[in-house]
Image 1 (cartoon, rainbow, N blue to C red):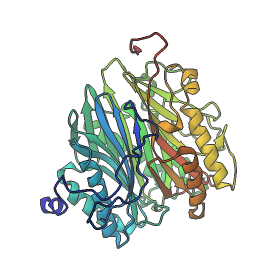
Image 2: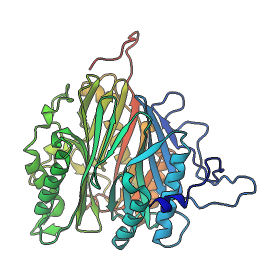
Image 3: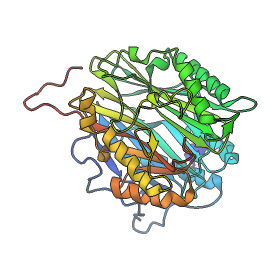
Image 4: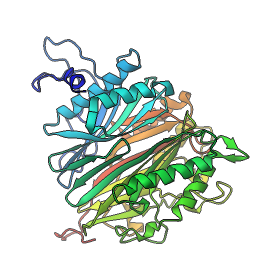
Length: 460
């Protein structure tokens, strides 16, 4: 492993020939929301007398808050070659971005989108060889990148100057800073075998609960969940697999009172559940992961957000699922004067009905409208946080799940027109309803507003 890492260790003074400027700088003061004059344009910048180097297409956002520096990275190889070539190109690009930050950085969580399930073992071998004992929590999800690459990676990195990162095995990473502990946990991939979709989900949630228990946490601490389900809209014994996943999730969540979370100090008029994405994959396994937060700090608070133009998922009528999906449209957390908002997988749904059926561009527009409304200051105020809110310009990154590859360019054109330059991955995946063509998720970072004449930080 040491030799593998040293193969690509050049001097820090070596010129970097690829444009590695961030796409966005958020919540850091100064340039924000994708308006920095130093933004890169994705083109190569060659040093004098230096040949072109092999680096993947990348975009990343720098986020600074609460004494932290975080990076959201999206990397896709573009140099061609076989899968191992592409994987190494991706790792090299991530490494180059981290090395240019001017302070020690480590990757804590990454999702590897892979076109062919047979390439998962090679990807795992390469990532484990590079990261060694500091292997981030890594998910391998069989969702082909829409651009045709063999893989694409979303990674989250953090400066270790003031942070303690704990690597507790392949399914558990903790991040501790200034009295707050973040927990990235996964149950890995639960193969279907002879299990029904319900049994598969039941086993996955139980396994994830055990992983959390290893660091004295439980589902009551979870704020964000991702569920990657093979054959999500396939029918088993007359019932769609996603509906059976929802039934299992509801039964499992009955063991937990999310409203009793001590961080949920102000909740207006509805139940609290984690934000969530439930999306299809090309395998019939079920891959799960979660993000939890624990703290005794008084200035930390969470808010479960619902969208006024959408029926809450947990209130869906039985025609959509025997037991309604138990998730929030978004989950927000305030830390001092900073706000983070995790947006659940969002689609072209108004009230509880799919709109713009058969129109991928129209569905993408509606989906972004839904996200914009969900994270708006007006919606936060409606639910009790008058000083909070975010805009589409505050999104650090997005994932766009496209059902049909022929709709990829249509969806991308809408996203680029409305969001500008933003780190993004477009992956081909089944969405949870047969008539939905696109789903988008993301995370926004913004500052809380102070009331006029108020020089004191809001006391939660």
